[in-house]
Length: 270
Image 1 (cartoon, rainbow, N blue to C red):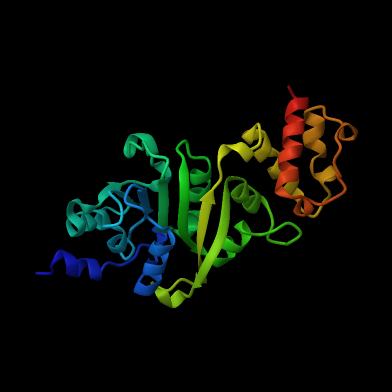
Image 2 (image 1 turned 135 degrees about the horizontal axis):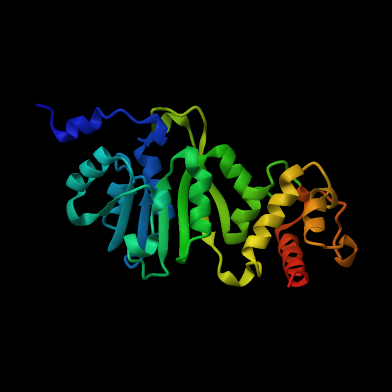
């Protein structure tokens, strides 16, 4: 009879769940070390998979949770790690930090080799969280990492970069080759560290800011004046009443300028 451990080794990754398991122990150690976990940190791992990160995380924090959607993996990890880790069988995108984990900490740290097919959704869940996250270290597709860390005046600079840099200070730590995974993905990967900002620098109206950025990049090759024309007409805003160079393209506008423009428009709409 095959034991649970042997079944686990024979487990076939599910493509629809984006399962590409990290198998490189040295990379796993580097990822865990980069989060700089203290005993009183509340740590949440997204998609522990075969536990390559979990086993190095288990003894570092007194409050360690791992969220896993796959039922077989969830059950196996619970047996394997016993009471050391609090496993939650749930889709991370549906996780409620307050009710599912009873978060009462401002020292929340997130870690994971996340499913690449829902990277953006996971990131925005963290950015817009109703609890205070301090740091996150996540593995993702290299091209996505380059987009969210992009600077103005570059082709990768866009909505993802602006929203990411609004809420965090992101930094690519190192790249990871396909050979570090099973099965091997068709893309290169990067490990990114996010240091979350405090509320002080956020726009007055985050929904308005998000709408403004989305409208601006809706036709990124056009000038801001052309991109925002319909938005301004709908809200009865006159370009001439705002001191801003609308002749530029959105990729040439810095984050601080978008915040200032959003705050100014917000006051006009009151």
